[in-house]
Length: 267
Image 1 (spheres, helix red, strand yellow):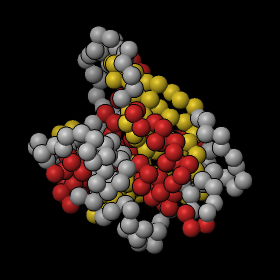
Image 2 (spheres, helix red, strand yellow):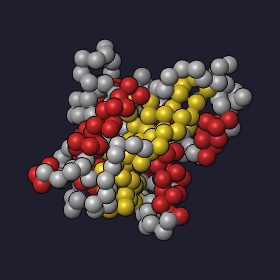
Image 3 (cartoon, helix red, strand yellow):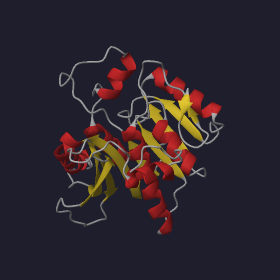
């Protein structure tokens, strides 16, 4: 067990998968989107996190917005058990739940509910692209045994409300794959219609000043009827550490916004 946000804790298997920077930043972008939707008068009362793993994104968003009724979908039983244990410990099991199932299954959530905010942290690697870790839970979190960003986009289209947003992370090496997935998989396959989704903006997170981006997070929405998309969108870059290895002020503020304590190594 270790600290997550505020006074909340998260249970993690020793030597197993652990929550990381991409989880924190995905939750931050999701919270930013929720705030913007609320300011526009959109009812944001529910949240879905696909492939929720240990529940870190699910809980960080739920901690920031305690009015939300949140649901996570996770295929690994051990991760589900740990996430549920964390929710019970933090007293949030009455408003945040985790379903053990495959996000690709169209009936994994009974009655096909719709959500104004959907998040997802797909695995970064296809099978064979890198050495497999020895831990079973780490394998499933890093490698696409159940599909990658394409499957997440298809599932998100199924669960989003008409004004809903899908916040998803992908390796910086897969930015072109991001675009292709939205254009090709964000559609009603059997109807042969044009893609129904578009990327609004993307955040590129740079691990250290002078280095290339490590991962990207996209904000994706359903297009309005008849709306065209030329494939262009806004891009924002956030550097995590400066050349001396200290947190940048911008990233440190991100951590504070998400309920993390002040850090010592800040520029």
